[in-house]
Image (cartoon, rainbow, N blue to C red; front, side, top):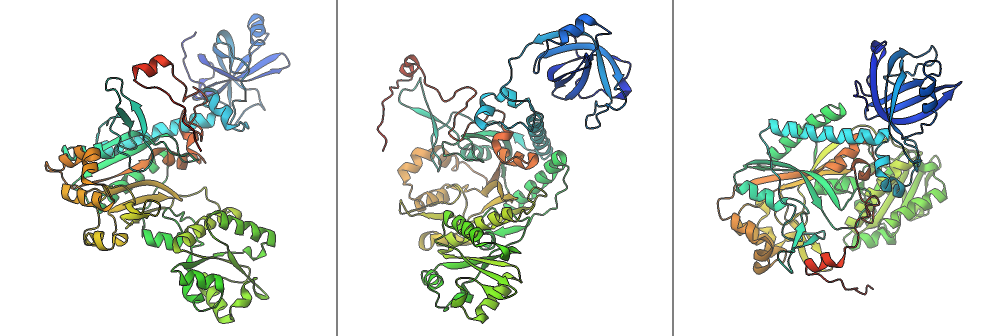
Length: 590
């Protein structure tokens, strides 16, 4: 192998006449009138190399044996490409290297797919041959962006006095929502470690320890059903600060976003970010993570249709629900089939049905228009700002169902209308979340975020008499319809923590068993503290325009939690099980 003098992406016409050595993979092989042209690829780019029989017949003969993805090293002289063959799309497009010597470092079997960005590859094949998939330029770019993002995060937080501290991967099982991944202990028979769902308890312990400003690029593990934006193991930026309130958290995080987006994406963000209360986000957008790059906001319509006599609307109102609608601008031209498809979408997202009214030159057109006098229709048009050519869409149901259905429908209509959602970043803080939510199945209250979240000071008295009204000192940072991060001001006093445990049905004995070490730490001068965790993988989909976090993780799992590359999870032999004091038993599932 020759010592490389340059990479395959840096030679230009300034290097003409130089003797160089390159190494890489054969990207393409072409024979033009006896002269062999090869595009040699490494991580940095592509350089065209040339084997000319007039210069070296033996070497030219060897070059005809080469195939794509062979690994070679070459020596040669940099020359100008012939007139008319310059490739302006490449940095190296003005030059070529005429090869004088070559070393074949390794051969390659025929790849199962082309190493190109436009290759059509099933996800199963991509993940099985991930080492080939990662050779594609787009995937190489994603790895670079991930590296650059993490470096920018570390640079910023270091400049602000944060300490990077690693917390344990093998820890205690403290189930708080998703299932834990359990790891049996060989040295402590019958006992198990858990892989952390987050470093939550340890970062609070670090605040008690006087660390004051902590961060970690943390691996987290959750045994839950997967989808495009979930993986059994994922990475988050974890941050925690002492002696801070919500405003302090917002300020640091906005500075962080401004710095990282500038460094990685070349984007200048405008701060401070807008703030919406949870109830406002739900009523305007039907979700607590709204995409605010376009309009089509929801409007409450209950007052318009109260007393109308229309059975579907009246039923929802009488049962304490609501009616929400939006203006699908310019969609009065939708066919009946298209409207039926939209209705099915609403039903698939929880609604019993969908009401619609077209505003045409002939007036309001709808199967339900006959149930309403002109005055109500005019009020509807005024609130939704409907003009001729617009389509009003409405759902009447329990308030939460109606809001969430309309929120999903809002995004669906945006896609149908081909609204450009690939450009720009619309940030907002969602604040004033409910502290608790009611679990209908278990007939008890549980934490909206997690049980270590502080209650608003003015709402503490509501915990016992009206827990549904108590608000949390919690906040989410959303961007383009994605929850980028979530956090809260934590409870730092033992008496208040025990009060929250009691409110969500955790007995004193259970709280000591699961969280005793945290409660004990709180008795030794725990400072007020709060923090936030950002999903790094989701963050990277913004920078790479990826539809799934699997494209920004080097070695992801499938939606069934399987790694086709390594065939994990796999069976283990009986000797290993015996060492762990385990025996497998088949369980009948229903």
